[in-house]
Amino acid sequence: MADGRDFKGPDFSLDTPVTYFKEVEGRDLLTPERELELGKTILDGRGEILNKSLSIIRGDKDAADSCQRIEHWLADSHKSPLSVEDVMAEACDLVVRCAAKKKPSKKLHRTLAEIAQARQEVECAVQEMVEANLRLAVSIAKKYTFRGLSFADLIQEGNIGLMKAVNRYDYRTGYRFSTFASWWIRQTISRAIYDQARTIRIPIHLLELRSKYFRVYYGLLKELGREPTPKEVAEKVGIDEIKVKEIVNLTLDSTSLETPVGEDGDELGDFIENKDAESPFEKVGEGEMHYHLTEALDSLDARERRILEMRFGLGDEDEHTLEEVGQVFNLSRERVRQIEKKALQRLRHPQWRAVLEDHV
Image 1 (tube, rainbow, N blue to C red):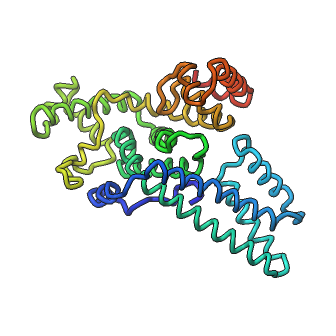
Image 2 (image 1 turned 135 degrees about the vertical axis):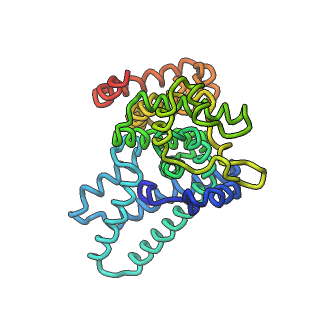
Image 3 (image 1 turned 90 degrees about the horizontal axis):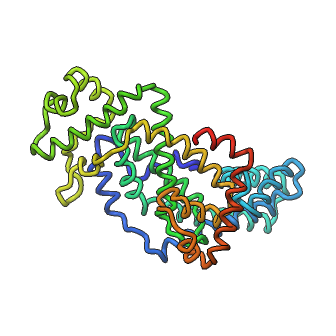
């Protein structure tokens, strides 16, 4: 489960959307207290795993460079080029290789057992946090339908983003996991749509026309109380029926919108947002920028990143005043301004400036 792509949550396929949604809806949400407890288990557990791993691999000359990288990551993970997945995988691999070279002892056996126990606790906590937030991935994925990926693929990408969020969440920042996770879910889905559009090279005008087509389609569906004919939609959009067929053929997700979901009479179509949708290509284009922006923000410490997100309305945040941010962090307006200035100076480093300016 290194990058989350092996995680699929409950069994899902386009043939069983009802089963999937029922299972997701049936999962209990986490209380703030439980969320904090799981976040602590994950973060502290990984620290324990890495420190105990270092006690085994230190002194092995073949592992000197890796040992140094792990130590640097433990000292300040936000400044390390290694992701949490990278550092955990490297540490576990080194433990196996270095332990095999050592003479068996009770101390070594005990340390290995403690590492295994900590890994199990972390994995259980990660699984619980992911599964409790699967409906968040679904609710965000529904906003990206008919943009080049099937609904099943959108949910899968959303789950991958959710897994990344769990791996990077720091409970000590004090803000809720759902706010943090929403950014990662959106970023992962946007990136997948961008890659798909780039691969199959759907013309921009068709992407925009398809978005307009489905907005009109859903409007007529609600107005008429039945599925509109291609001719009715074509007249409303201002195109001919041949073009309508071309647009429909671009749609990869052909699951019926009338598929019942849950026990409350909801239908699959209810999960699909269609009001005032942005141009899919415009949204896809933002995916590349979000990808680089997220990388740049990852170079900041948790407080600096959070302050920039709040000040400039990044992720799920609206823009906040210096005073509002100060109230959240219990800081003066001037102190918030100083931290903001310092963080922006770090983002002006040539490493990030060249990349971000491409999107300005």
